[in-house]
Image 1 (tube, rainbow, N blue to C red):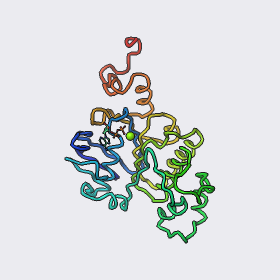
Image 2: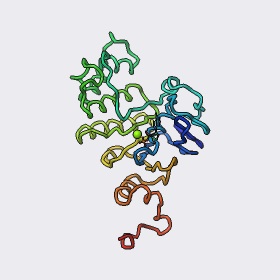
Image 3: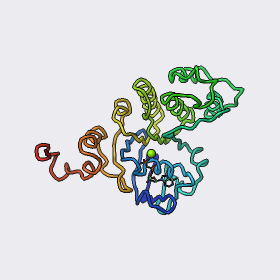
Image 4: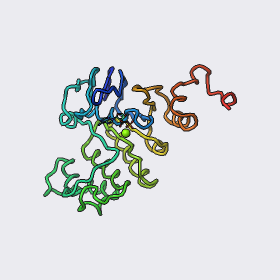
Length: 255
Ligand code: ADP
Ligand code: MG
């Protein structure tokens, strides 16, 4: 079953078209990697899928598990199971990590964590942070670990992950990405993951990668191969996809 179906989506910010007639689907248990240069509209896509008000959907439709959610509010979408981790998670002084995690679990502040929940917090190496204010003084890796744990506690069905690997050390990356993969496999949820790096694909088993360029997706293919092409030749060359015409990159000719 399709978790997400995006049909001919056009999104503008303050009258400027950022995404043009974008269409794609994400099936149960599938992860897709989204590459693209800075400013190409990756975060805009996540904002539009979340229904954040600054992203104006001028045409097209978004279906979540078969239901048209194009006109639904961010809150309604979140309740359906569309959750996101942000590129730069904000600091929230006065809100303890423990309380926010309990909120994600649908618990009250006076409730305690179950032993299973405690084990997961421990696996995320966040036990010592429970009494601290959200993200205040957290390192990059600590912020991202806490973000991913929140998504798991929210029992997200569609995970929108905006650069979960940026500013994260190799150990935290392995930890959060392996836990994400485990969650996706266990629950049959789906993930759209934005990255500029390749290491996260060691842990997240993504079916497709694609490049967002000039307002549209290009070339759904093996994300590891795509990443190598982008690294070697850049985004424009990658999406030109000469492979299709020549049956493979002609490395000699390119020199
Ligand atoms: P990416 O995440 O791929 O780096 P973004 O989706 O953040 O790109 O941005 C896409 C384009 O939209 C950029 O040109 C950016 O400057 C512009 N943009 C994003 N947010 C706003 C905003 N709030 N107001 C005006 N322009 C914006
Ligand atoms: Mg971005």
